[in-house]
Every structure is written in C-alpha cells, then in structure tokens.
Length: 327
Image (cartoon, rainbow, N blue to C red; front, side, top):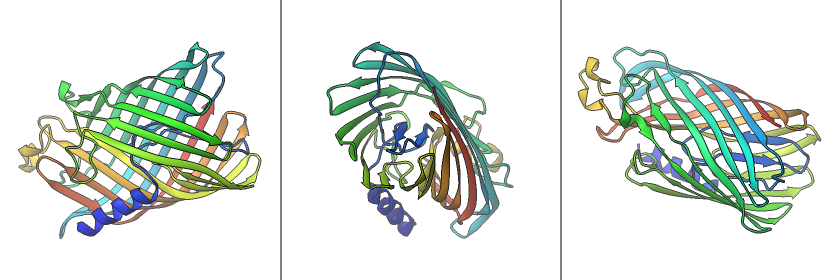
C-alpha cells in the first residue's frame, strides 16, 4: 500500500500539479483537444478568444477497461471490468468584452457490473450543472471561476447528502505563443479533495504548463490528461500520455447492509484510476475532432474514507473513443 501511495504521488508531481477543472486547448497546428469530464483532478487551460457571440462546446467520451482481479490484501473479489461514459455541454455567453458566462450540463458514469459479496457499487456517477465565467484580466492573464452543483453518488436512493457544490478556480498566464502556465484550486468542503488517505483536505492547488518546444512537438504537462503530442499533419496528431480518472462519491444509506457492512451506508467513496495512453486525434473540420486511444489502466483504486477500506485492481487494457465539437 505504501508503494502505491508513493507511486501515485510521484506520478502526480511529475506532471506538475493537482487540480479539478475543465480543460480546453488548441495547438499551433489547429488540432484541438478537449477534456471536459468532471474527473478527480483537472488543471484549467483557458483559451483566449473573442466573445462577440455565443459559442458551444460538446464532449462525448466512452471507454472500456478490460477485466482484472480486484482485491483487498489477499482477499480477491473476482474480475472487475468497467464501462465509462461522459457527456458535457457548455454554452459560452458573452456579457462584456472582457468576460463571458459558462452555462451547461454534465453527466459522468462508471459501470462496474456485479461482484459476489463485493463492497464495490455497481455504478458511480455524477449529474450536475456547470455555472461559471471566463474573465480576461489582462493581455497575459485569463481567469475561470466555476461551480458544479449536482449529485455525486451511486444513484441508489438519492438523498441530500449526495449533493455537492465543488468550486473551481483556474488561471492561465500567456508567456508567449509557445509557452503558457496554468494554475488551479478546487474547494470541496463536503467530500474533501484528498488523494488516498488525504480525504480531509477541503482545498487542493494545482500547477501545469503547455510548451510548444519544436515545430511539430508540444508538451502538455496538465492534469488530468498530460500528453506529449506530435503533429503529423495539420489535421492529424498522435500522442502518448497518462489519464487520471475517478471522483468522490457518497453512498446511499443502505449500501453495504446486505454484506454485513452497514458502516458503508452514507460513506464517502473515492475512486482513483491511472491510465497510460497511446492515441491519435483527427480534426475533420474546425471545431470537430475525433480521438481514438488505448493502453493500460495500470491502477484502479477504491477507498472508503470513513470505514478505512481500500481495494485495488491489477492492470488491465483499455480503449476509448472521444468526440469533441465546438461551434
């Protein structure tokens, strides 16, 4: 367990930051990539753009992770596979020349199926509003403030305890066309923003950067999707990177009773997933991009902060398709 904690911290530190914000970037070649999932850590990459008219962002992502053994210590609970889905829509509404509102919806879901005598829920998910604003503070600084009020739970017997309103603050500093710095803070006093056993931390800071260091090469050292990108053509990009997935969820009051674990009722469950990815993205037209990727989910971990129960899986292969549209 200690090794896994150290590995997780090293991976996160190597990618320069911790946060929980939506990301949107555009490379010099014109190939765009979006990461709008409400995952457990996100740095904000806010793009400076004209705000003369309403614009729209849409993200569809579906992934499958193959089965692998899930266990707690030496006790195995069987073979765990996973299907995940994310749908996000945001409208950017101009108010003044230097700022615009962000209004939208997001739905995020993990399906794990059923395991005999398991303390893993069949489903984890989130359904929330997206309410925020982008503000151009100066020629160099862009600020994003956003809240996502919604339900973060197993969607069994939903109660007020499963509602949460995480607050996200992100900023971009534009050094030049080839280098940008990103800063972020997540405030989550209800569920906490902790990693592994740091579940009592209500605030989590973050730091990241985008560096276009050669004609066709870009380093995106930004969570949750750090990448090394290579532009093969104006509309085709290949990449290697990592994916950090998961979230914090509240179980329903009766969860665990059938397994003799009534202490899991209304417990906070943190799901953490680390993937290593290889993929490509193709831009059909400005604002419409298809991404295909695959690799290994090297770590999937479930942690109940109250009862102090931790389960994890062996590595498993995964595949993902993502469609991003901006218009």
